[in-house]
Image (cartoon, rainbow, N blue to C red; front, side, top):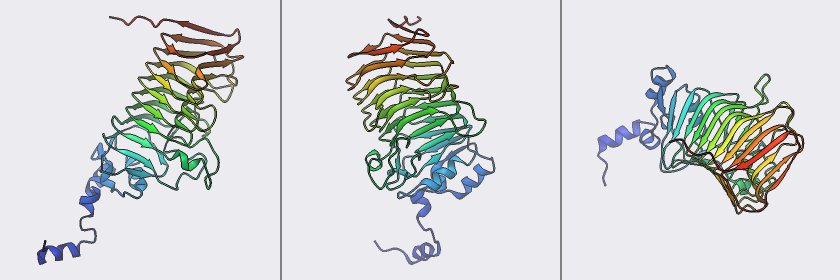
Length: 333
Protein backbone atom coordinates (compact mmCIF):
# COMPACT_ATOMS: atom_id res chain seq x y z
CA UNK A 1 0.00 0.00 0.00
CA UNK A 2 1.34 3.43 -0.96
CA UNK A 3 1.53 5.94 1.93
CA UNK A 4 0.37 9.46 0.93
CA UNK A 5 3.22 11.97 0.96
CA UNK A 6 1.48 14.21 3.52
CA UNK A 7 1.06 11.30 5.91
CA UNK A 8 4.69 10.27 5.43
CA UNK A 9 5.86 13.78 6.33
CA UNK A 10 3.78 13.76 9.52
CA UNK A 11 5.17 10.35 10.53
CA UNK A 12 8.77 11.34 9.89
CA UNK A 13 8.29 14.51 11.90
CA UNK A 14 7.09 12.59 14.97
CA UNK A 15 10.00 10.82 16.71
CA UNK A 16 7.64 8.30 18.35
CA UNK A 17 5.29 7.79 15.41
CA UNK A 18 3.05 4.83 16.24
CA UNK A 19 4.66 4.36 19.67
CA UNK A 20 1.75 5.64 21.73
CA UNK A 21 -0.67 3.37 19.92
CA UNK A 22 1.65 0.39 20.31
CA UNK A 23 2.50 0.88 23.98
CA UNK A 24 -0.63 2.62 25.25
CA UNK A 25 1.52 5.47 26.61
CA UNK A 26 -0.45 8.55 27.61
CA UNK A 27 1.79 11.25 29.17
CA UNK A 28 -1.11 13.62 29.75
CA UNK A 29 -3.01 11.02 31.77
CA UNK A 30 0.15 10.28 33.76
CA UNK A 31 0.49 13.97 34.65
CA UNK A 32 -3.11 14.03 35.89
CA UNK A 33 -2.51 10.99 38.09
CA UNK A 34 0.66 12.49 39.56
CA UNK A 35 -1.17 15.75 40.19
CA UNK A 36 -3.91 13.91 42.08
CA UNK A 37 -6.56 14.69 39.47
CA UNK A 38 -7.18 11.02 38.73
CA UNK A 39 -7.65 8.33 41.37
CA UNK A 40 -7.61 5.45 38.89
CA UNK A 41 -4.89 4.68 36.38
CA UNK A 42 -3.87 2.26 33.67
CA UNK A 43 -0.31 0.92 33.83
CA UNK A 44 0.03 1.14 30.04
CA UNK A 45 -0.14 4.93 30.31
CA UNK A 46 3.49 4.77 31.48
CA UNK A 47 4.37 2.73 28.37
CA UNK A 48 4.98 -0.93 27.66
CA UNK A 49 8.04 -2.79 26.45
CA UNK A 50 7.75 -6.46 25.67
CA UNK A 51 11.45 -6.92 26.51
CA UNK A 52 11.35 -5.29 29.97
CA UNK A 53 8.34 -3.40 31.33
CA UNK A 54 9.74 -2.96 34.85
CA UNK A 55 10.34 0.78 34.87
CA UNK A 56 6.89 1.60 33.51
CA UNK A 57 5.03 -0.73 35.87
CA UNK A 58 7.05 0.38 38.90
CA UNK A 59 6.38 4.04 38.08
CA UNK A 60 2.67 3.26 37.80
CA UNK A 61 2.69 1.53 41.19
CA UNK A 62 4.45 4.51 42.76
CA UNK A 63 2.18 7.06 41.10
CA UNK A 64 -0.19 7.42 44.04
CA UNK A 65 -3.15 6.00 42.10
CA UNK A 66 -5.69 4.43 44.44
CA UNK A 67 -6.59 1.86 41.78
CA UNK A 68 -4.22 0.65 39.09
CA UNK A 69 -5.23 -1.61 36.22
CA UNK A 70 -2.59 -3.71 34.49
CA UNK A 71 -4.09 -4.43 31.04
CA UNK A 72 -3.60 -7.40 28.77
CA UNK A 73 -1.19 -6.15 26.10
CA UNK A 74 -1.21 -9.43 24.17
CA UNK A 75 2.28 -10.23 25.48
CA UNK A 76 3.67 -10.74 28.99
CA UNK A 77 4.66 -7.91 31.25
CA UNK A 78 8.27 -9.03 31.66
CA UNK A 79 9.67 -7.54 34.84
CA UNK A 80 12.56 -7.45 37.28
CA UNK A 81 11.79 -7.24 41.05
CA UNK A 82 8.89 -4.90 41.82
CA UNK A 83 7.97 -3.11 45.05
CA UNK A 84 4.39 -2.56 46.20
CA UNK A 85 3.09 0.57 47.91
CA UNK A 86 0.44 1.24 50.56
CA UNK A 87 -3.16 2.29 49.94
CA UNK A 88 -3.48 0.80 46.48
CA UNK A 89 -5.56 -1.75 44.62
CA UNK A 90 -3.92 -3.36 41.59
CA UNK A 91 -6.12 -5.24 39.14
CA UNK A 92 -4.39 -7.61 36.72
CA UNK A 93 -6.83 -8.11 33.86
CA UNK A 94 -7.78 -11.53 32.60
CA UNK A 95 -5.03 -12.82 30.31
CA UNK A 96 -2.25 -10.77 31.89
CA UNK A 97 1.02 -12.57 32.61
CA UNK A 98 3.57 -10.86 34.85
CA UNK A 99 6.71 -12.81 33.98
CA UNK A 100 10.20 -12.68 35.46
CA UNK A 101 12.78 -11.29 33.06
CA UNK A 102 15.17 -13.99 31.90
CA UNK A 103 18.61 -13.52 33.46
CA UNK A 104 17.35 -11.21 36.24
CA UNK A 105 16.72 -12.05 39.92
CA UNK A 106 20.41 -12.72 40.61
CA UNK A 107 20.02 -11.52 44.21
CA UNK A 108 19.27 -14.37 46.59
CA UNK A 109 16.26 -12.50 48.00
CA UNK A 110 14.94 -10.95 44.79
CA UNK A 111 11.17 -11.40 44.65
CA UNK A 112 8.73 -10.76 41.84
CA UNK A 113 6.58 -8.51 44.08
CA UNK A 114 7.63 -7.31 47.55
CA UNK A 115 5.52 -5.41 50.09
CA UNK A 116 7.74 -4.39 53.01
CA UNK A 117 6.02 -2.77 56.01
CA UNK A 118 3.10 -1.61 53.84
CA UNK A 119 -0.65 -1.48 54.45
CA UNK A 120 -4.01 -1.43 52.64
CA UNK A 121 -3.02 -3.39 49.54
CA UNK A 122 -5.39 -5.31 47.29
CA UNK A 123 -4.15 -7.52 44.44
CA UNK A 124 -6.82 -8.91 42.09
CA UNK A 125 -6.00 -11.22 39.22
CA UNK A 126 -8.82 -13.52 38.17
CA UNK A 127 -7.57 -15.14 34.97
CA UNK A 128 -4.09 -13.60 35.36
CA UNK A 129 -0.77 -15.25 36.21
CA UNK A 130 2.52 -14.34 37.86
CA UNK A 131 5.28 -16.60 36.53
CA UNK A 132 8.92 -16.89 37.52
CA UNK A 133 11.72 -19.11 36.15
CA UNK A 134 12.46 -21.69 38.85
CA UNK A 135 14.65 -23.91 36.70
CA UNK A 136 16.99 -21.00 35.94
CA UNK A 137 17.52 -20.23 39.63
CA UNK A 138 18.43 -23.84 40.44
CA UNK A 139 21.74 -23.74 38.57
CA UNK A 140 24.73 -21.44 37.90
CA UNK A 141 25.27 -18.58 37.41
CA UNK A 142 22.56 -18.08 40.04
CA UNK A 143 23.74 -18.31 43.68
CA UNK A 144 21.95 -21.09 45.49
CA UNK A 145 19.03 -19.68 47.50
CA UNK A 146 15.47 -20.36 48.58
CA UNK A 147 14.15 -16.81 49.04
CA UNK A 148 13.25 -15.68 45.53
CA UNK A 149 9.53 -15.38 46.33
CA UNK A 150 6.76 -14.55 43.90
CA UNK A 151 4.90 -12.46 46.51
CA UNK A 152 6.70 -11.49 49.70
CA UNK A 153 4.59 -9.82 52.40
CA UNK A 154 6.72 -8.56 55.27
CA UNK A 155 5.14 -6.86 58.31
CA UNK A 156 2.14 -5.79 56.23
CA UNK A 157 -1.35 -4.90 57.39
CA UNK A 158 -4.70 -5.22 55.61
CA UNK A 159 -3.69 -7.13 52.49
CA UNK A 160 -6.04 -8.91 50.09
CA UNK A 161 -4.85 -11.28 47.34
CA UNK A 162 -7.57 -12.62 45.06
CA UNK A 163 -7.73 -14.84 42.01
CA UNK A 164 -4.11 -15.03 40.86
CA UNK A 165 -2.26 -18.04 39.56
CA UNK A 166 1.30 -17.84 40.91
CA UNK A 167 3.87 -20.24 39.49
CA UNK A 168 7.48 -21.44 39.57
CA UNK A 169 9.23 -19.09 41.97
CA UNK A 170 12.72 -19.68 43.31
CA UNK A 171 11.33 -19.78 46.84
CA UNK A 172 7.70 -19.59 48.00
CA UNK A 173 4.66 -18.70 45.98
CA UNK A 174 3.61 -16.45 48.88
CA UNK A 175 5.66 -15.55 51.96
CA UNK A 176 3.92 -14.04 55.01
CA UNK A 177 6.52 -12.87 57.47
CA UNK A 178 8.64 -10.16 58.98
CA UNK A 179 10.32 -7.01 57.74
CA UNK A 180 13.94 -6.21 58.51
CA UNK A 181 13.05 -2.53 58.94
CA UNK A 182 13.76 -1.17 62.40
CA UNK A 183 10.58 -0.83 64.42
CA UNK A 184 8.43 -2.83 62.00
CA UNK A 185 5.86 -5.25 63.47
CA UNK A 186 6.97 -8.84 63.97
CA UNK A 187 4.60 -10.09 61.28
CA UNK A 188 1.58 -9.46 59.08
CA UNK A 189 -1.94 -8.68 60.22
CA UNK A 190 -5.38 -8.86 58.57
CA UNK A 191 -4.44 -10.80 55.43
CA UNK A 192 -7.05 -12.45 53.18
CA UNK A 193 -5.92 -14.80 50.39
CA UNK A 194 -8.71 -16.25 48.24
CA UNK A 195 -9.06 -18.17 44.95
CA UNK A 196 -5.29 -18.29 44.47
CA UNK A 197 -3.31 -21.15 42.88
CA UNK A 198 0.34 -21.58 43.88
CA UNK A 199 1.95 -24.14 41.58
CA UNK A 200 5.43 -25.58 41.09
CA UNK A 201 7.42 -23.51 43.58
CA UNK A 202 10.94 -24.25 44.79
CA UNK A 203 10.45 -24.27 48.59
CA UNK A 204 6.75 -23.93 49.58
CA UNK A 205 3.44 -23.07 48.06
CA UNK A 206 3.02 -20.61 50.94
CA UNK A 207 5.06 -19.98 54.09
CA UNK A 208 3.39 -18.40 57.11
CA UNK A 209 6.11 -17.17 59.46
CA UNK A 210 4.25 -14.67 61.61
CA UNK A 211 0.64 -13.59 61.20
CA UNK A 212 -2.43 -12.41 63.06
CA UNK A 213 -5.92 -12.55 61.55
CA UNK A 214 -4.96 -14.53 58.45
CA UNK A 215 -7.62 -16.18 56.28
CA UNK A 216 -6.68 -18.43 53.36
CA UNK A 217 -9.66 -19.88 51.52
CA UNK A 218 -10.58 -21.61 48.27
CA UNK A 219 -6.92 -21.87 47.24
CA UNK A 220 -4.74 -24.63 45.74
CA UNK A 221 -1.12 -25.31 46.67
CA UNK A 222 0.45 -27.89 44.41
CA UNK A 223 3.59 -29.48 42.96
CA UNK A 224 6.17 -27.84 45.25
CA UNK A 225 9.58 -29.33 44.44
CA UNK A 226 13.11 -28.05 44.82
CA UNK A 227 14.37 -27.71 48.39
CA UNK A 228 13.04 -28.77 51.79
CA UNK A 229 10.50 -28.52 53.29
CA UNK A 230 8.68 -28.57 49.86
CA UNK A 231 5.27 -28.27 51.54
CA UNK A 232 2.00 -26.94 50.23
CA UNK A 233 1.71 -24.71 53.29
CA UNK A 234 4.22 -24.35 56.12
CA UNK A 235 3.52 -22.56 59.40
CA UNK A 236 7.02 -21.93 60.70
CA UNK A 237 8.05 -19.01 62.96
CA UNK A 238 11.71 -18.11 63.01
CA UNK A 239 11.93 -16.25 66.34
CA UNK A 240 10.48 -16.54 69.83
CA UNK A 241 8.60 -13.24 69.68
CA UNK A 242 6.67 -14.25 66.55
CA UNK A 243 3.06 -15.41 66.58
CA UNK A 244 0.42 -17.40 64.71
CA UNK A 245 -2.82 -15.99 66.04
CA UNK A 246 -6.32 -16.42 64.60
CA UNK A 247 -5.12 -18.10 61.40
CA UNK A 248 -7.65 -20.06 59.32
CA UNK A 249 -7.25 -22.22 56.20
CA UNK A 250 -10.56 -23.22 54.62
CA UNK A 251 -11.67 -25.12 51.52
CA UNK A 252 -8.14 -25.44 50.15
CA UNK A 253 -6.37 -28.29 48.34
CA UNK A 254 -2.78 -29.46 48.81
CA UNK A 255 -1.68 -31.92 46.14
CA UNK A 256 1.45 -33.28 44.48
CA UNK A 257 3.92 -31.57 46.82
CA UNK A 258 7.27 -33.27 47.42
CA UNK A 259 7.02 -32.60 51.16
CA UNK A 260 3.90 -32.55 53.33
CA UNK A 261 0.70 -31.00 52.11
CA UNK A 262 0.23 -29.17 55.43
CA UNK A 263 3.16 -28.60 57.77
CA UNK A 264 3.37 -27.04 61.23
CA UNK A 265 7.07 -26.63 62.09
CA UNK A 266 6.75 -24.85 65.43
CA UNK A 267 10.15 -25.63 66.94
CA UNK A 268 11.23 -21.99 67.29
CA UNK A 269 8.02 -20.35 68.45
CA UNK A 270 8.14 -18.82 71.94
CA UNK A 271 5.39 -18.32 74.49
CA UNK A 272 2.80 -16.75 72.18
CA UNK A 273 -0.05 -19.28 72.03
CA UNK A 274 -0.97 -20.43 68.53
CA UNK A 275 -4.57 -20.46 67.32
CA UNK A 276 -4.93 -22.08 63.90
CA UNK A 277 -7.89 -23.78 62.23
CA UNK A 278 -7.67 -25.95 59.10
CA UNK A 279 -11.18 -26.67 57.87
CA UNK A 280 -12.71 -28.54 54.92
CA UNK A 281 -9.35 -28.94 53.18
CA UNK A 282 -8.04 -31.82 51.07
CA UNK A 283 -4.43 -32.99 51.30
CA UNK A 284 -3.69 -35.80 48.86
CA UNK A 285 -0.83 -37.30 46.84
CA UNK A 286 1.88 -35.43 48.75
CA UNK A 287 5.09 -37.47 48.88
CA UNK A 288 5.87 -37.00 52.59
CA UNK A 289 2.25 -37.26 53.67
CA UNK A 290 -0.87 -35.14 54.09
CA UNK A 291 0.02 -33.41 57.36
CA UNK A 292 2.73 -33.06 59.97
CA UNK A 293 2.67 -31.22 63.28
CA UNK A 294 6.10 -30.80 64.88
CA UNK A 295 5.59 -28.68 67.99
CA UNK A 296 7.65 -29.91 70.95
CA UNK A 297 7.13 -26.82 73.12
CA UNK A 298 4.40 -24.79 71.42
CA UNK A 299 1.35 -23.64 73.36
CA UNK A 300 -2.18 -23.03 72.14
CA UNK A 301 -4.72 -24.75 69.92
CA UNK A 302 -4.78 -26.27 66.44
CA UNK A 303 -8.14 -27.39 65.03
CA UNK A 304 -8.39 -29.88 62.16
CA UNK A 305 -12.06 -29.92 61.18
CA UNK A 306 -13.75 -31.74 58.32
CA UNK A 307 -10.59 -32.32 56.31
CA UNK A 308 -9.73 -35.12 53.89
CA UNK A 309 -6.17 -36.05 54.80
CA UNK A 310 -5.21 -38.98 52.60
CA UNK A 311 -2.17 -40.85 53.89
CA UNK A 312 -0.30 -41.18 57.15
CA UNK A 313 -0.34 -38.14 59.40
CA UNK A 314 2.57 -37.34 61.70
CA UNK A 315 1.60 -35.44 64.84
CA UNK A 316 4.11 -34.68 67.59
CA UNK A 317 3.53 -32.04 70.25
CA UNK A 318 3.95 -31.29 73.91
CA UNK A 319 1.31 -30.87 76.59
CA UNK A 320 1.00 -27.12 76.02
CA UNK A 321 -0.60 -27.57 72.59
CA UNK A 322 -4.07 -29.02 72.08
CA UNK A 323 -4.77 -30.57 68.67
CA UNK A 324 -8.47 -31.15 68.04
CA UNK A 325 -9.77 -33.22 65.13
CA UNK A 326 -13.39 -33.58 64.15
CA UNK A 327 -16.12 -32.74 61.64
CA UNK A 328 -16.49 -29.27 60.26
CA UNK A 329 -19.08 -27.10 61.98
CA UNK A 330 -22.43 -26.95 60.27
CA UNK A 331 -22.95 -23.95 58.07
CA UNK A 332 -25.41 -21.42 59.38
CA UNK A 333 -28.67 -21.23 57.43
